[in-house]
Every structure is written in C-alpha cells, then in structure tokens.
Length: 130
Image (cartoon, rainbow, N blue to C red):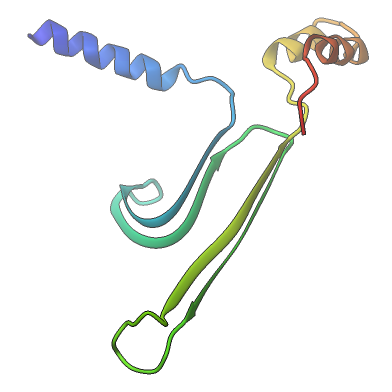
C-alpha cells in the first residue's frame, strides 16, 4: 500500500511540474468559494464570492477583455414578488496572437535567421477562423 501511495504521489508531482505553455482561462459566474494560501505571508485565505470572476494564465501576446453589468429592479418592501427582476450580462473576448515557442528561440540563438523561422512557423499552422 505504501508503494502505491508513493507512486501516486510521484505521478501527481510529475504532472504538476511538467506543465506545458498553453494558455489557461477559467471564467465563473455566480456563487463560489475559494480556499488557498497567500504566498506573500503564508496565511490561509478563504473567499466567498458572488459575481463574475476571471482567472487567466497566459503566455505573451494575449489580449483579454471582460465586460459585465448587473442590475436589479425591485419594488419597495421586503418581500420578493413577481415584479422583482435581477439580471446579469457580460461579454468575454480573448485574442491570442503569434506565440513563439522555445524551439524557435533556440534556432535563432543557434544562428538561424529570425524572419525565416517565423515564416516557417506561419506556413505550418493552418489559418484560424475568427
């Protein structure tokens, strides 16, 4: 059993440390609870939120635009009725431009012409739909 736990821990650590350079975007809307550790002073953090939250881990040449609004139309009084209206609306736009990988940087450092490397990368990638 101990060997199984050690192997499982090794696989988890390997998966966490061998990440790739892709862009990760997480968008949430509504009620959420987050727990974590504040790395500045190593204290626990707990957050209860209601609304929109956007978390991104992106490489270079990325543009992100998040717009949103919330409105509530209610009548006077404490009771909710059929006339109570609450709404949220939003828009998320992500534009990812050309991102150069480590292999291209190594080619340029080795003496390859940077323009030829970029043109070769552009030819190998099919055009993306907008």
